[in-house]
Image (cartoon, rainbow, N blue to C red; front, side, top):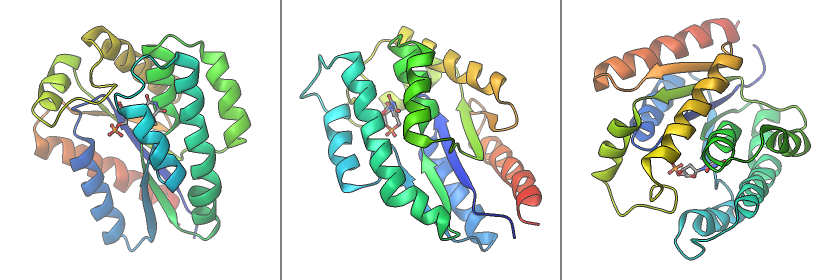
Length: 211
Ligand code: TMP
């Protein structure tokens, strides 16, 4: 049996992450794989407190660098307390967002240089990267329309459409750079079609990582 895998899910707001997480959960259960399900920012007590600061409206004018560093503070805690111990124990990890979101939102959206994020990634993760990342891609207008039907917008959801155009493009650039790890799912299709893409991507991954 190969070592435990680290799987992440990414996409702009309204891409359907919640539904796709449920499908991934089901597929791992059906495959008899023990896993930890978690999210970023968050996943630990400190991380969830940082999430409130990052997503809430208390610090609307937070500086871009503070935002970036808080994302990595949450990630450092998450890796030490949850992710690495789980993987060491043979448990797979299914994480709702990870460092690709930092490149997309703080890099693409806020305009922080790629290399600065790369330095923090190297420092905090010391080479650890997801084994598989599913990127739910869809036009920004469609995503925002879907997201708008939910509850009051958080600090990121309050950004303008142009911010999310840059986030989306950065995600696609990352996928083009690392096609073996990041699999793009067309999330503009019907729910059945999106779930079918998730299933086939996961089945392909499982067939290569379980023997
Ligand atoms: P969500 O997980 O409910 O989608 O909300 C998390 C928000 O935080 C989302 O708008 C993306 C944002 N985010 C970043 O900006 N950078 C990051 O590194 C992560 C993990 C999330």
